[in-house]
Length: 266
Image (cartoon, rainbow, N blue to C red; front, top):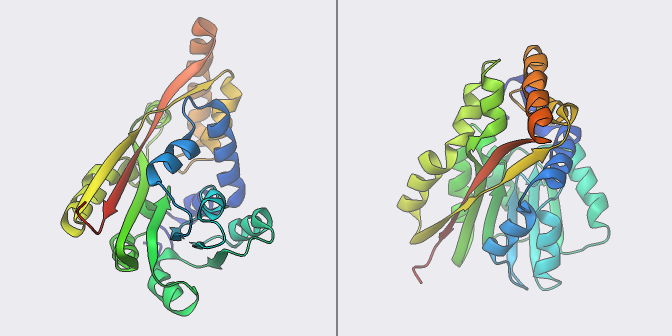
């Protein structure tokens, strides 16, 4: 098994590659029925002055608004495996002094906190669209939990079934087990862990429909995914074009699962 992510080299490149990530974000933001960034921030309830840990931060979809919400009295300690993503995030942050960034595999999170990050204890440890990629996922969760302040919280977001594009692709290609695993990661892995390790926890379901007006756009997004198979493209494009001809667009569900665990019972 690859020790950086659960994927082999080609699919790992799609996980960690900044160009793949940025294109996925661009299409999702442009054609989704729900604003994920806004939805997430409303449920995380980040407050001014808090110290946050962002694990698998990518190019900063959450890190940037976190830094704005915590203000000068707070901090964000963010880490990602991709040097390119961290470099892009540094550019986006500019001279923002309340964020510390570090390139590292999340499997080494304990060492990163101990040896690199100035802030060692956090009001919230967070990871979105990232934790399930790690073969050390439960160990990483332990580190996130153990890094919390006395009244802290841990928040993890992952994809969740049903996922219409995966279902469409599965008609014409084999979906990697790792993809099927990530769609059940929330209820089958996170929920039991949070039940066993936190005083209480809340689950939030992200309901979203992606509407694409053009088959080429859908295929473009499919090419950015970890389950892409070029041999399936023509058949998928035909199905999508038929639906667009009939209704004017192609729609599919793309849902998510957020769990927030609290170290305190109130």
